[in-house]
Length: 371
Image (cartoon, one colour):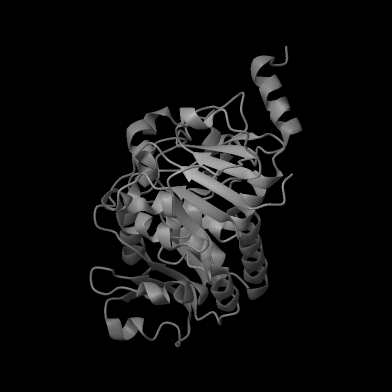
């Protein structure tokens, strides 16, 4: 394996530019944060990059180019649709970005890129800030802040329909009574990290007030549990990842969307319907400090082992094969293909498919089931 950290990236299609350029930024940020020298082919206009795609051009050690490296043997070639002129080059590795996470991939071993921290928080000093936040005092037991307008349904129906975000928040406000602190005033919001709300479920009404993004990670770090309801198009949201990155334990109804799946009462709390939601919130409110500390450690370890950018890059580097498929989870693909999700989809099928022996066993069971 080459010790050089050199990456040449050329993208020929528009899907990587989706979500205001968040996909492009997060992908390149993972390599930049691990010290890669990135040479990005300059074939994308500034107006097409989007708000966050434009930020990728300011990443550390990234430069624009109009040609591939003269000698490509030590370089990783990152692309969506392979450039015909570059096929004849000898690369250290070829990494193709794709988006079809509902496909089965029986005969390949793709890497699903972990859903990332939002670009507004993924800066050069992220590791340093996360380490600092992780030692914060915990002033809240359960915390939620996020959009709810339009979050009335979910497109994904497999393995079963998810309780929508708006219904989750309404249920809490209707049924939790004295256990809820419903924050509507900016003045109250400002006290959350100082006052003790350890026996409360704190819900910030984002129609009335909003946590400044500069304070977001610090706010997450000051709670034991973070309520992580699903999005509209797909369940996955940046806030779940951000919560785990600072040691906040997620309370969620989509644990199977992470790879590997989160485990109830180990690194998360899982709820199902309205009644179960209330039961699980009460469980969190009544949980003893020893169990919370254990789950917090597990949640943080999960982030470090499976979700951090360096883990993703190490998985690519450690692969013996020179051609690797990386899958990105996107709203566009979910919106178009939601009905294709099933038990054979690579997204849900199972845990960290880098183990080739395990993979061969899976293929064998599929094509040669026991008699």
